[in-house]
Image (cartoon, rainbow, N blue to C red; front, top):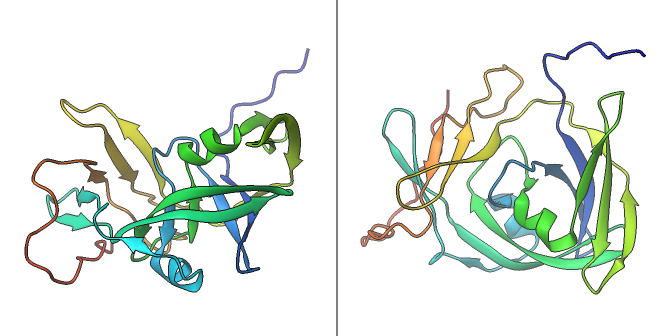
Length: 199
């Protein structure tokens, strides 16, 4: 029986997501992400309301802090004829415009089936009829990007944006940690939200 050779890395996969305004955008599949992330420019193009009361503080590897801009709630999306809504945390910029984390998988009961060639078969179910299972075309993301994963924390769960060390990254998200629901909350004084540190 043939055993495949181990690989050093495999690309993340992306799928096409349609929005209520008729536009479409590649969505990066990241099952290790605790949240769905959307870039500010895409959120503005979709004319979505950003709830600044749902911000996440992010702490960089150098102890500098950073805040997301808020959360774009109930964004209408459509994939493979399946309509649904998602909440997406808004960032100033990132090496992607839309990252589909665990909340996306939960909403459409998404399953990712690995294939021998390193690609994935992506299946979703219609939230209004979970017996309806649909195969969604996917493709490899050509540029490597940072991923988001969950780590243990003494109190609140933390979201870590793991640094991508390849030069193809448009932005290296250097070990930022997010603290959802941190007791101290956002800064009391209004001002510009700090931007993510560039490498």
